[in-house]
Length: 89
Image: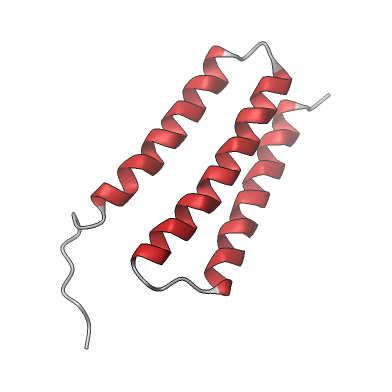
């Protein structure tokens, strides 16, 4: 039996995530001259993404080790890509 969920029910959960990534993009743009600061922003975004995913799935009571590992894997992959772009020589 599937739940009939309105697509807007998750909006309060996704707005903070959108805000986090918007702030990160703005920080990348404003501090484009400082590679170390950009790396710190990238690390903060990766950590925030993982924490947001854990909290989101905990609230919906479907948190599992596989979900946590998936968020960590995606965050690490994204972090590797962003850091390689920042520090390319």
